[in-house]
Structures are given as C-alpha cells and as structure tokens.
Amino acid sequence: MKSIQMTIDARLLKAVDQLTRARKTTRSAFMRDALHAETRRQLVRDATARHARGYTGQPAAQGEFDVWLREQDWGTP
Image 1 (cartoon, helix red, strand yellow):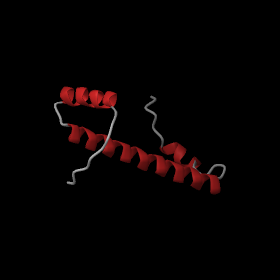
Image 2 (cartoon, rainbow, N blue to C red):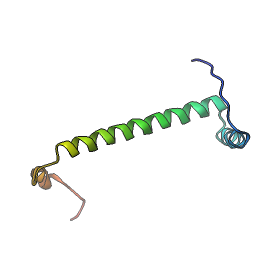
Image 3 (cartoon, helix red, strand yellow):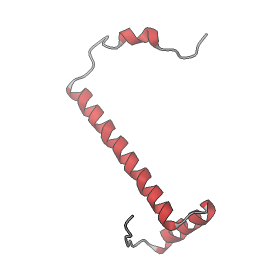
Image 4 (cartoon, rainbow, N blue to C red):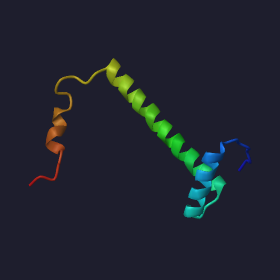
C-alpha cells in the first residue's frame, strides 16, 4: 500500500472520526472502503451509460425478446 496525504474540512473529519469509532475501524480503512465503493458505483454508471448508448444506436426490435416471456417466473400460482 501507499501512503497519501489529503486535505478535508473539519466537519467532514469529525463525521469520519465518529463513523470510524462506531465501526471500530481506522480512518485509512474507512477511506479505502469509501473509495472502493465509489469506484464500483462509477463502473456501474459507466456500464449503464454504454448499455443505453448501445440500445440508442441499435434499439430492440418489436417482439425481439418475446421468446423469453414463457421462461419468466414471477412466483404467481
């Protein structure tokens, strides 16, 4: 791992310190988790945008997915 230095305002630091105490973790671990979570969220946003662009450029044809309707199980008796 690499050490980094960052600057945050006092209110945010206080909130982070409260959370780290409550979770019995460290600032570093908390920041790593937060950065991992945001990175994952951005990957999902990027994939969703690519998916939307794909369907914008090549929209689904009428009835294209009808074959799957019989395969769906919504749990109804």
